[in-house]
Image (cartoon, rainbow, N blue to C red; front, side, top):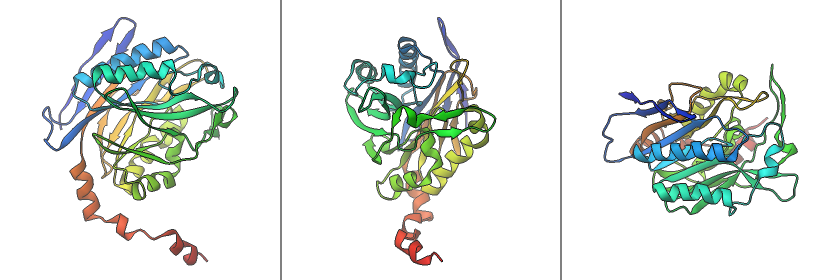
Length: 308
């Protein structure tokens, strides 16, 4: 496997990594995807400028889909700041991102957008899929909220300002059927099993902003487990580095195949850039045919009667 790294600098924005995993010519049955890594701050315009450059990089690399991390558009200086900038999905900020997709003819996974909630004190942490014409194809509101006392770190209470999602969402795309999740969902295998076995997902998207402590301990192993147990590709776009004095993200953007092999990784865990890899859905079919988990799984009724 060859890996090519190209560094580029744009005024104050540094995109030090453009990493392509795989051979220079992709197989005819493959589709190219990209995953972004960035360090969002509490400046909507600055974050949009970074995303614009990453979209152009991904499109020029031939990617059909670019996945952004959770909170790509904004990370507040303190908890709850995001509520003040939250907008409906038809609002002007999301429309700017839809225009990016249309102008570069690329699908976008916009994970963790601050969608306006049902009242002035709450938002929804919403994963939005935009097609290459700039139309919103689907959206998923994060179900599992990050209410955690991080060992050796700070206490997080996402539910204080975020409404819990209620629905599991999958959507068809040029790279296969996508299963939509966000960050902390990763620790709950049930949602991924529903996406695979009931909703037919072939590619699981996990846009995230993992903390440094939890990322070092669990990030890669959880992602590879979700890929293996569901026999799906996993694309995990990550926030990276220090957003402000109080918040730091782990980084390590990954693309993983259905056998659990890392096929794409940004070499620098703290950099802003994209990793590009080729997804081959025939590999998904092959892995599932040789190890037919869907046929061998026991229904929930079996476990109810098998429990002592």
